[in-house]
Length: 332
Image 1 (cartoon, rainbow, N blue to C red):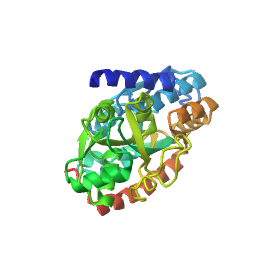
Image 2 (cartoon, rainbow, N blue to C red; image 1 turned 180 degrees about the vertical axis):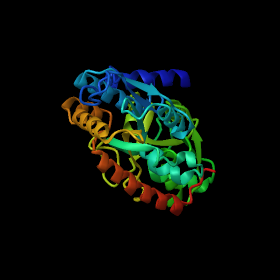
Image 3 (tube, rainbow, N blue to C red; image 1 turned 90 degrees about the horizontal axis):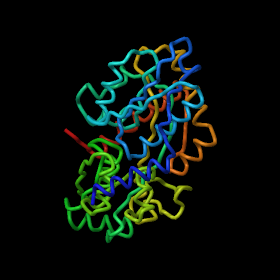
Image 4 (tube, helix red, strand yellow; image 1 turned 180 degrees about the horizontal axis):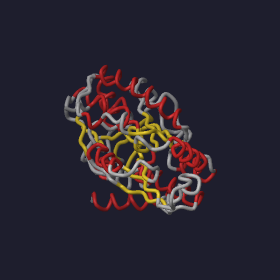
C-alpha cells in the first residue's frame, strides 16, 4: 500500500510542477560569462517526490530556457544534507556547481548537532533565496482528529503515544513537532521516513500526523488520503483559505513553522560569478510562469541578492539558536 501511494505522490508531483527538469542547463551566457559552456550542476539534498525537489526542477527548466546552457539537478539525499554538501566540496569553486539548501541546513542544524561538519558558514557563499513556504499540520483522511485541539487533547491524555513523521532529525518538520510539544506540554514521538514515505506513513495510519509544506502534502490531499488540520502561521494562506490557523483550530497561537530555500556556491567562488548567477535566478523567479506554477504548489517565489541572503541567514541563525535553546530540543 505504501509503495502504491509513493508512486502516486511522485507521478502527481511531477505532473503538478510541470516537468521541472528540462534543463537548468542554462546558467549560461550571463551565469558564468567567460567560462567554457560546461553544464551547470545543482546538487539537491532532497529526494524525488518532495516539494523542494519539484521547485528546483521547475527553476532549472526556466533557467535553461532563459540562458541556453544545460543544467543538471543532481539529487544527493542523506546525512541531514551533508551528503549534498560534501558533493559540493569536491567541485571547483567556479560557479558551475551550486547547492540547493534550506534554513534547516544553514541555520537549524548548526544548533542541534555538535559536529563541526554542520557549521557551514565558512564553506558556502550565498547566491539567492528561491522561495518561502509555510507549513501545515496534516493527518490521514481516516484520522479521528478533526482539529488541532482534539489531537493535542489526545496527546496530553496519552504521553508518548502519538507520533509524527519527519524527513530527518533536525528538519523543520521535526522542529515544528518539538515546538508543538513544548507549547502544549505534551510528549510525542518523531519518526524519520525517507522521501515521500513520510507522507504515506500518515495516510496509512503508521503515524498520527506530519508537519510539512503544501507542495509536499498536496498530492495526497487532492487524492483524498490526507486532511489539513491547520496552517502553522498567524494568518490563513491564500493557497488554502479554508484551512484554519493553529489558533483557530484550537492549538497554540505561537505555533509558527516556516521554511525558506536557496542556492549557495562553494566558498571562493568569484564575486562577479555569484552576482551574475543571482541575477539570472531572480529573473527566472520573477517570470509569470514560475510565479503561477509555484503558487499552484503552495510556494511563494522569493529571490534575493547574495548580500540579502547573507543577512537572512544571519538573522535566522540567531532566531533558531534562541528557539532551540528555549524549547530544549536535542538530537544527540
